[in-house]
Image 1 (cartoon, rainbow, N blue to C red):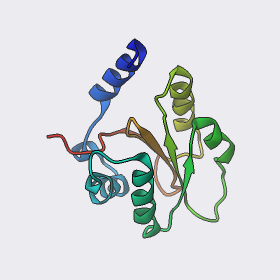
Image 2: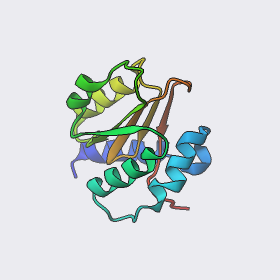
Image 3: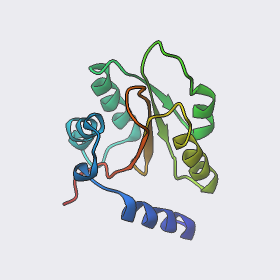
Length: 140
């Protein structure tokens, strides 16, 4: 791990919260009923699959983006279906971190969640814009 990665992770660690810091019922249930139920040492693909299964019950369509630039071309204002994006490696380097920050400020994005190893983006028109920095697993 490089010195820059250590700095990024330290910032993340001190900003991140758990289920007690979430005010959105939608995000709270996603965290407690889905993400925290996934074993700690699992692959990103497994996280994606479990989150996708969970979101099917909420009528969201989850799309996988292997990087931030791929996501920037997909964000849309379509009203046809609620969209969600799973983005891997949001803290890979300074460039991806800056892109992640710009995506979270996009007017079409209402919910963004930073889980360090991946991020989730939601177009949820009936909710105010919120950004969360959360731990994937309970640690208390």
